[in-house]
Image (cartoon, rainbow, N blue to C red):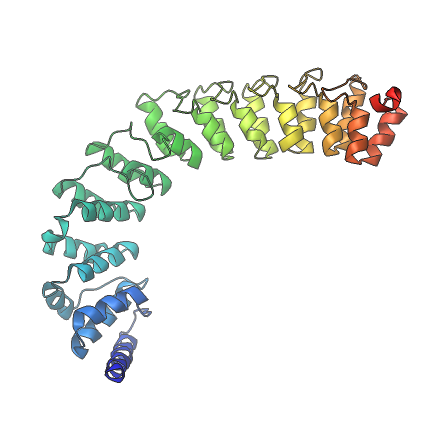
Length: 382
């Protein structure tokens, strides 16, 4: 039995491959494994049916224009297997053969009785930007335009993700609400800012969305753009009137969250757009402290150059000099010394900056501080 199946399958492949190679002017590759499996199930070991099915998928999954042959029309009309029909539709959408997808759509309305399948097809059409299919589905099917897919995204969120602006507009026209949230509770504005989709942001702002809109987490559009290093979007939102000093639930501004991206151009865009550099978060850290702990030396030096507070202490009573000594930023230490910061401030652990440098093992900083007359609290206590 196994040998019989194997022989039939070899015939299926060899005959179909010969037929495919004979199609002049068409770049053809073999179908994927899933399509082959569906063909085998549908054809029931009929070599003629299997040959047509195999070559049909080979052509469908190629990059060439798809031309319906006479036998394609007759065979498709005789397909009763919904799984195979769905596979043809999905492959036609994926490989940009809208004529095939339209043929399946128009011929087999029973495929659309299951709302879940209809939603899946609409998500697929939006993802690949098949606007004609999107419009057909919306015009003829009972679609909940605000449903979420398996990834927790609405149709509008998918349109934003794939930058399918035309589909976005069409969905809104057919009843999709711009108030819909994804499973992460991200609004359309937040999601567009996160992904840098300025076209959608323009549409939403024109429709009444505030540039300072805050979500469930009290994050603004600027927070989302900043934490995802969307510099052009940050500049766009600032020009649109976004306030760069709003705080989220953690007390952090867009400038605070941008520190973690270690992107100096992003920091510059926010500071030049009006971001206050001395606002502290709920942990008592200003942007300079965050940059010393989680950013980089370039950002730290930029903030010092821009006049950040050098006297500010965090909840552990650590100054910027303490933190620079902890992470080993020699140039920052030099900058701070030039600014005449106090060298012997003590934190809650009774450590001076020199003590921190000693415990961290940064010899260059130790030597530099000693040259400037810095003292060790522990050495004085002996």
